[in-house]
Structure formats: structure tokens, C-alpha cells
Length: 217
Image 1 (cartoon, rainbow, N blue to C red):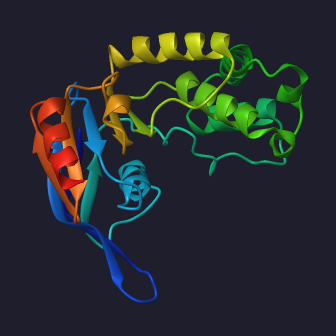
Image 2 (cartoon, one colour):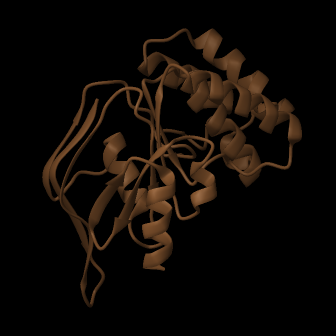
């Protein structure tokens, strides 16, 4: 279970205060995957980061009664001067998992050849994306956080393997995906919410949410 209780978050832009959430209260129960539709610049990433515990609310509380993943593509826990292999072993120890298994899984899924044993700072953006997504899937969570969907990759085999594993995980887990594109949500969830003017409006179906989202545009 993930719960927001009277959560408020805003930023000062230099000229005005930008409100991300205004006293938001909601709960995500296990098995209730949710899509959040939000235009660019409205705070999609900030909300995902608060769910993961990477950012704190200005007011209110965020409660996590389950294993919540780091956001897809998040690089904050990765040491760019260490290799993927070294990062895998470090992260595995933090989560109390088998370093050999996590390293072997990521090496197989990311499939970046000799670069897996080179510093992450030498990777292309595509290699980094594949490695971080492999690491996300190597660690099993109750709730997965996805900002804008699957990583972009021109490698058909990687997309096939990663997509198959993610769909298998989601049979037992819950996902929250945030995007400005309704089509991205269709693969992950049936229920949806719309983030607008600092408020979250929840709907029982993605179609209902899309109607409000399209109207707001």
C-alpha cells in the first residue's frame, strides 16, 4: 500500500510559485495499477520521486507499506565511475540479495558486451537506459514506478526480453506509470488519474480520464 495524506508540494520559479500538489490524499492498494496523465511541466517526475522517497513533500505524509521501486531510468543510486558489474554487486548488498545473481541477470538482459565491465560514465545514453532498466527488473518490488514508460532502445531483442519480464512481474505486482501520452498507459493499467492545477482527479477507467485530459487541452 502507498498512501499520500494531505500532501502539498510546490516550487518557487523566481517569479511565481508553481504548485505540484495541493493537499492531495489518496491510496494505492496492492493490485490496483494506476496511470497518471499529466502534461509536461506539471510535476510528473516530482510525484514519482515523492512516491519513491527521493523527494519530500512540503506538507503532509507519504506512507509506504510495501516494497516500492526506484523510478525507471533513475541514475541517482548508480556510481558512474564504477562499472555496471560493480554497481550491481553494491546495489544487491544494499537490498540483501545475492550479488552474483543480480550481476549475472543484468549482464544477460542489458547485453552491452565488454562495456558491462567498464565505468558507466563511458556508456552511451542507450547503454545507460538498458542497464538501469535491467537493474530495476533484477530487484523484485511490490510496486513499480515508471515515468513515461519503457526506455527507448533500437535493440529489438532487448525490448522483447525486457517487455516479457516486466509483464510477468506485473502479474504479481502493482505499477504506477506517469505520462503525458494516454497511449503509454494502455499497456499497464485500466484505472487512471489526471494531474491538473495541483490536484489529482481519479477515474475508474482510462477512457474516462482521457476524456477529461483531452478536454483540458
